[in-house]
Length: 404
Image (spheres, rainbow, N blue to C red):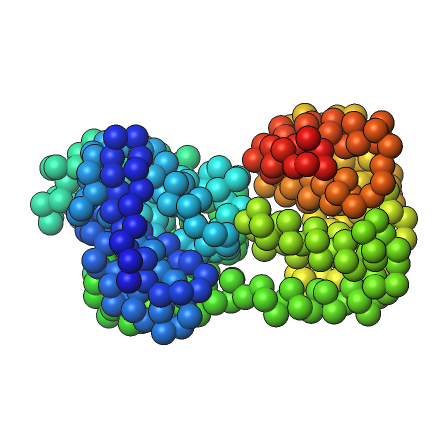
């Protein structure tokens, strides 16, 4: 167990890290503190997961004061981004609402593998929330932030609807203020939401039933974070399709795939991007016409790396660069499919993922191919244009000796 500190705009956030392995960020409810997660973190450690808990701004050992949800959401964004990707985020009540607000930023969402909401939906019934808080004497000292949150219900629901992540909602039992109608409204808005119930718990599930909550979190987090086996299977498929027998700058195509994957790992890219990096040339590309699989055999790749990563591989391989690159900088970006001739607009997370994958590939080519100056200048211009969607990765590539 180690102490962690995060300085945030005049506030100091105090936290604790426990265990080793992929990270689960645990965000407590309003009026609570990070200590409520201690038994949950201990159980997650036994499952090979690392837990990070912070006292939210103005709670526990953390300084500062928050009167709006935005302030806490920005703190949560900093908590997420300080950890190696991917991260699973668990938020109870206020912590869950702050997590949703944070994930409105696609770049933050790309850092996350899944979201667990503990007895909270994005748009709880305002009258019921006020009555529940008043009955426990909890609203008077937090009236500003409570009203700010309740006013943001439609906005938070819209955000949660668009989050392209698996979401688990853990409900408390009969004493919870959450009602079936609210849960069903959330599920109707986002079909990716699954629901589990802890009947013995009230609203504060971490305090009432920590072992059961830990079991649910560990089960889902381990599934969402299990990319190691998939990574091995993805490389094995590329080898079986002949990637080790195709020439490519720097040796073979398989060696190139290993290096591009390594770049995405170094950049803490999401599992989707890392898996797509391994397989990005499977259908060939506009610059490398040696397809390992026909575009009509997409299901074969999908069975290995999953539909999300496969869709990025297809997007990258099908991109007609002469028609698409002329529009770089636009949002959304119309991508012309060289296989079908169709044009499809991509935006937000898909656009950022496409940009990161392209930058990693181009950087490796620049490092290992003997390119004329005019071609290198073209890669620099391309990476510069892609900075509109992936500024951090573009800056790293442009600072590399191969392109500097």
